[in-house]
Length: 413
Image (cartoon, helix red, strand yellow):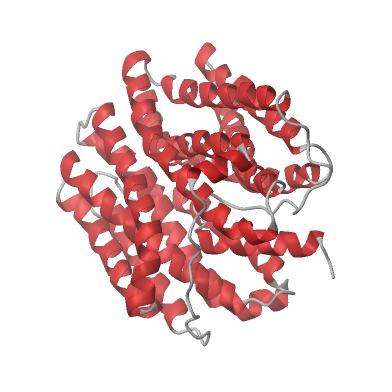
């Protein structure tokens, strides 16, 4: 692990700075939106627009890279991100923010694809598993640390918007000055939705539903916190707890995934998520219990993402895995667009508890669908690929590399 870190630290450090900037702006906008008296519905549209841009970028950025190269795409999109982060504070209008969120979602999608292809190219078959684990850890550390930075200045001013802009700008320095050459780029055309659904109905439906859960967590947690009356310190702690739970529960759930019927685990985790998230809907819980709820929420949803990817690949030939991963990420992105809007509508209708109710309903729907699918198809006799811990912000480059590594590990020569 230390050897891998020594050879890839510029890339990993740059990616962590990117996650710091992205994680910070995601929470900060919810706080600043309340200060600017934006309504919950207006903020839900703003937050949803990030995922519109991200989804669009995942389809357009690969062609941009092929046409002009990694370095130009990386520099251009990075400049766009830095500029938008400053413009948020300079132009506090929710419609302007919505447009900026599309731009910044598009830019982050392209930047992740570019940086992750560099990281993948810098790894060998022997070190790729360790590099992927380090990347997951770096992602989570970046988002968690971003929440602490929110306490350094007044969110009604400019400083908290300047900090992520500077962090994103600095992220390009270690990556672009790294000795790793820009890799040859080739993206995989995704399987069409009919082929994907025929291969795994549960995988497709689950990825769509989880998209809504992730976007609600990433986009609406800070909106919920301000509506619930949390101060910045407690809000940042709550948001951080989501990603702490996601980091620490990935690996034990992954261990279980490779030793039992994945559908039973999907069903159990989804049902548990529904029960946990109904607690703050039905009861007035103290803040310490809210932290536990946040940790379990992230600790269930993040492993479910990796679990569904592994489950789909149980029904695919190795030659179809890369194409399936591209299609599943697109399905997840489609689900993500609706998450903030539906959450905002529920919060407007019943108050802050709508944040938890939306995700509880999604988990229950997934559990019920998983139980029904278990009556329609026998379990696979054996897994074709092992579980690999992944985070939803990962691009198709990392997902393809992870699935290929998992397949190699489960089918050694």
